[in-house]
Structures are given as structure tokens and as C-alpha cells.
Image (cartoon, rainbow, N blue to C red; front, side, top):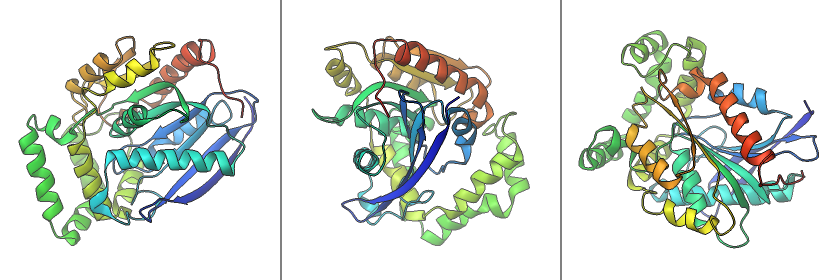
Length: 319
């Protein structure tokens, strides 16, 4: 496997938010570039197995949402939107092109959870002159109004968001800190309620709890509200039409039977948007399958990239 080097930086968005990003640059002359869109309330802790597997084999860009990871809290949290996150992504890619040797002329988008909404929104909104998306990888992804789909009612989903946004911020902060303050109890509850899975050990859950405790409450609440307002349904088809001028956009969709955060309706939406997608279903997976089924997911992503990007008709950009 080729060697790699790391580079990290921040970029200030028009709203004043500093978005942190980093890139792992493969020393190989021609490799696919992966651009990762994370889930709500996550940092890079759940991705360490992926980074270890892909470092040197691919180049990849990772970035944090406002109030997450190393990014600053949202300067204007009430203005957060999925469309705005897609613009953050475009800004990050522009800085990667300027500050590193990585070409962002073409890449594969990888979206986890609400990162799927961001990735699909980016595809939909891209214009002539924007980087060429070679393929899309959706991992346990949401396509629209995640709370409404979990509660099986958009009315209830909107009501839940209204409740959260009206709560005093110290209460939200206490809720975010609770798993870290009571880690053993939180881990037991997670397993008992089916929110975890066998492959997710206590150290992984603890790393997630540590990040939760650091989250900016306003950024978290309003990004959740933005995801609940957003829908790609009815528009992903338009995105597909745009790329069909040359070829069908390759897509890999990975879902899980016990995923409460991304129930079957999202999978059906993605099948409609990407009728030729490669679909992998994890029969015992939950929304934490990103960590619990990491080896299986990594293998499927690499197989997809080898088959449809490296050995397919979509060329890789030189780094």
C-alpha cells in the first residue's frame, strides 16, 4: 500500500463559522478521492477503522459540521440548513484544492446518516464548473425528515424539534453530557433499547459520549431541525437526469434491519433515486453499524470503488 501524508486546516464560511477539515493524501499517483459527510453529533471517532484501512489506498477528505469536532459553533445557528452544509462542503473542497496537492476535479461522495442528505443535496445543487461526482456511497443514510420518519409522523417530528429548540440550553447541554457522566448506565441502556449492537464495545461508545459532551447545544439542535425540514425526495431524480447524459451515476447503498434512525422508507427512496444502485443489507445491524460492522462495510465500499470507479468507465483524478 502507498504511503500517505496528512494535512488539516480550517476555512471561514460567509456566516463566520470556522469549518475544520483534513485530508489524507496518498502518495500513489492515481487513486480515487473520497469525500466524507458525517452524521449528526459525530466526530471522527467512529471512522478510525475506515481511515486506517483507506490511508494510502485512497486520498480522502473529512470535515466537521458547525459545533462538531474541531469546527467552531455555528455563528448563526438558526440559519443552519442542509443546503448550507452542502455549501460548507463546496467551500472545504475549494480550500483543499488551494492548500494541498489533491485535485478535487472528481471524487466519490460518502454520506453517513444525515450526511446522506448533505451528499445528495450537494449533488442536486452542483452547477457547471463544480467538481465531478464519480459515485455516491450511502451508509445507513437518511433522505428526508429523519425524526418524522422515526416517529412515523411529520407532525410528531416537527413537534419534537419545536420542543428541543425551545428548551433552555443548559438542559440540552445536560442531556448531551449525561452519557459521559454515567457511561456504564448509558452503555447498558443503549444495548437494552437496541440502539447499539454486539460489535460496538464500551470504548467506542465512550468516545462517542465524549464528543456528545463537547457539542455546541445550539448547533446540535438547529442542525437536527434543519435535517427535519429537509427532503431530497422528488429532487434526486433531477440529479440523476443530469448525470445520465453520459452514464448512470454509480451508487452503493448500505442499510441495516435494526436501524431506528434510517428506517426502510429511506432505503426505498434511495432505490427510486438510484435504480441501478448496489444495495447491501446488514440483517443484524443498527445505526451504529458504522462502527459495529466496520470490516464488512469497508470491504463492500472497497469492492464498489474497485468495480465501478477504478475499473469502471469513471477515471480517477491524479493527486
